Length: 367
Image 1: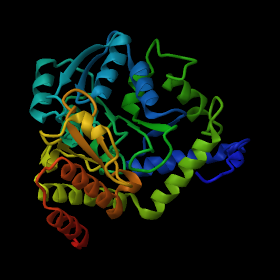
Image 2 (image 1 turned 90 degrees about the vertical axis):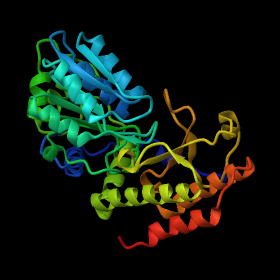
Image 3 (image 1 turned 180 degrees about the vertical axis):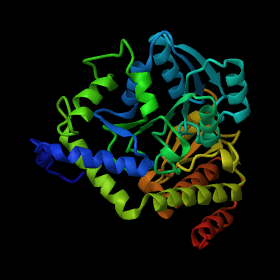
Image 4 (image 1 turned 180 degrees about the horizontal axis):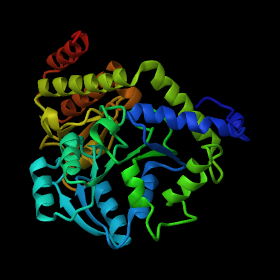
């Protein structure tokens, strides 16, 4: 390895106190919202736990849609605080159906909170967010959306859809740091959060954030912020601003389309239909003659990013990562080359020429 001097990263100057609010405003613009945006000084799992913990109280009822381990965790955090939680479980590693959501809400008309993950990187699926939120709005239900993976990879218009709480992380499609996250919160959601016994003096307290940052002018953040993470977030958001969020979403869509087209030319079995698929990760079922351990035993191509699925039902899924700066033709090509190397090694029939032709056609099509 080259001998790099990393000492310049030590003793980093503090992030300017007046620069936090502009970051929140940039994130609000990406989300398409005028709601309050909180900056959370930890990865998005903590932000999600903070939302659940801050909402939780015994007189609350929630419908928690579970399409991955993350949804299970969120339901557990709500239950820990006394919430009456109905966990609506999708088929393993599959998206939820709008019919299942409607039936669950019809069965329990007193539901006050609905929680759902937008896109699942664990399995490469996309839940029908717009229809779910519309259904909840008609019934006066406050919605919580885990958009950690989807923001930047899919259009996410918080105010147009009427999403009350959206949790995001910049480390995926926005190609930012993993050590920070953010939460947008509507007025209706604040009314639920400002109850008789919210957590206080805690990293999980959104009311603390409201009182110690929002209500005193959005200057210095409470606690001891990590300046490197905020400098990295600012750099990432500057890149997003220069490229444009619509272009970033389109770039992810094209990367997903090129990946799917090439895989279909290789006769791979795609896990879900196009309208149920995330633009961040494409998943296929590992060919029968390849054992999961054999796939994981070695790297299948330089520059590629192929990994196995995560969670129940995803054990034999192969994930093609085209997220963030990897949503580009060279990264997509490296992934397809790695898959060709894999199936060739195990004597699976394939047509590499057709695969590369399909990939090229997607990128060369002006539409």
